[in-house]
Image (cartoon, rainbow, N blue to C red; front, top):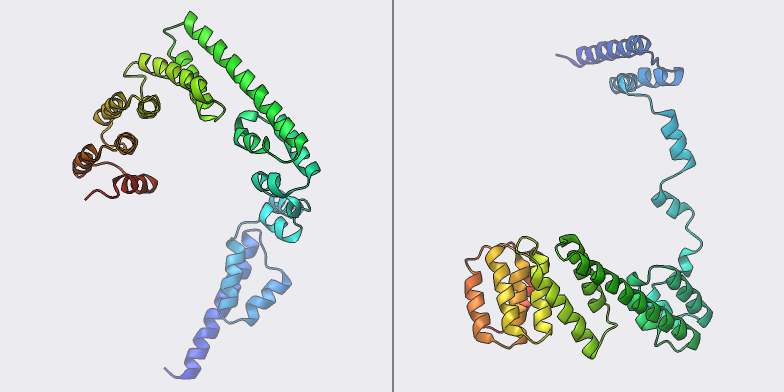
Length: 295
């Protein structure tokens, strides 16, 4: 087949595709415009193919186009017109250390208007600030938060006393106790008293009500109370019930490390070889840290 024949075949295919694009466009209610038809005619083969793509493509939704024009996406908008307040923002922990006093006071007022439970750590940092007014606001906010927390605990405890068989009320009381203990506001005998109350409520839970998280919480709380053998027993009970979960294994390792019981830790390491635990990346890192140094 000579070159002239090839050129003629290409030309015939081009004309057929071009005519097909024109006819199908009229039939489907999407006729090619003058500019589109000229483009399709001038570009061999590929032009009519593009015309057919235009014919069979769906018309864009006018409302969607209007929305995209009027409200560009946040990422595109951030490149075109960045928020004027963005250069002035900074993490609160750093702002408390480097900002001017009036800025820190404004931030403190924002914290006071927000939920203090989510800002306890920041408030504890701010109460030692060198600006007296900022430190005063933080101390007042923490005092108020502690008062409200103790009041809610007393109300929850009274409700539980009236309905001792209400499992949901007990779980809510345990949640509030755990949050209060972990807040960092309690020390000494006050902290120990709350931990004793938490142990009493956790011990009253039935086996069905005690999931992995609550079981490990009890083991951790017992260890903090200085009752390491009971803590190890609680963690071992969770391992027996949930052998594939990593949390009770890590809790038992923590207990052995805190007690410096290298013999039990070595035995636990051998036990882990055939346990079939489903380790997460973070869990495996903790396990290697606890078992570090065991030959």
